[in-house]
Amino acid sequence: MNDRFQRQINYLRISVTDRCNLRCVYCMPPEGVQLIPHHEILTLEEIAAVVAAGVRVGIKKVRLTGGEPLVRRGILDLVAKLRRIPEIDDLALTTNGILLGDMAGALQAAGVNRVNISLDTLQPDRFRRITRGGDLGLVWRGINAALQAGLQPVKINTVAMRDFNDDELARLAGLTLDLPLHVRFIELMPVGSSGSWAGSRFISSAEVRKLITSRLGNLEAVKKVKGSGPARYYRLPGAQGTVGFISPVSDHFCAQCNRLRLTATGQLRPCLLNHREIDVKKALRGGAGRDELVRFFREAVLNKPDGHHLNAGWWERDRNMSQIGG
Ligand code: SAM
Ligand code: SF4
Image (cartoon, rainbow, N blue to C red; front, side, top):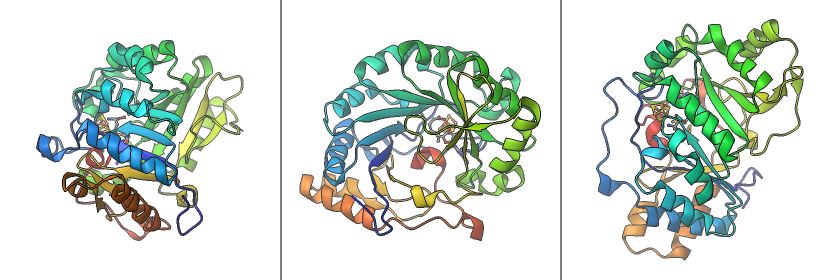
């Protein structure tokens, strides 16, 4: 279905849990976020019912995220349920990779097509600092398991942060020389507890690109990587993988936005960077059937704003990324 700005909306990102086994500095406060009681979180059946309604307005692509989706009990069942919806032709997952080493094969068998794995540094100590306690070795195990299980293309999400990892962004891009990985540099966004912190650590994609080309040579534009969304992709000379840039702050990619979000608590959210939400859970638990859910999707599509207002100082104060689903 098209929205008011002629964008075709066919992608739903679902936060399956607000819980996480890490506490990344840009995503959560040190003490973690206040956990939402279990009964407030959508059940697996409810999530599947929402997706089954979404396909009636043209949703074809689903991404499971969070929080950390692999800590959600029953995640493989959910994948299998969604796989059985014939209109869904692309089922992806975004993970911090900690549990992926043991789960990649089962995720692929249950029906996940591909994964994005977050990785902001190649240094174990720094990884522990950025994630407040994570083990980098486990993430590498997860990356290798994803490649072996054929969850491809395997994309790496790297948030660029001044004085945190700007000195190794070129090395991270260099991973694509020998491995079939697609490393994407994401601009830091002012969301939740990191809002006030993000300003002084922000690095634009243009600056990251300069850092990379000054060390590793030219980046040639690449047409398309499967599920490329808002990223722009390039290749280093002779590289197996690609380097991408996702620039929500410096470059308005809103004109190409094709997505809606479903939060862990069952709110349909037309835009990550806008407070507006539609309470699908309340309707579901009040007995709403498929047709009513379809109406909610129509409302969400028609209420999708044309773009965000980050550059005018807007920031999401009420919710962290883990709650909305990054
Ligand atoms: N736990 C999973 C993970 O880390 O991949 C999935 C959820 S996480 C919220 C999804 C993505 O959002 C991650 O790649 C993370 O780096 C990114 N993210 C979180 N907070 C962010 C922020 N303030 N600015 C930019 N990206 C952010
Ligand atoms: Fe957890 Fe992902 Fe947020 Fe890090 S970015 S705290 S791994 S939800």
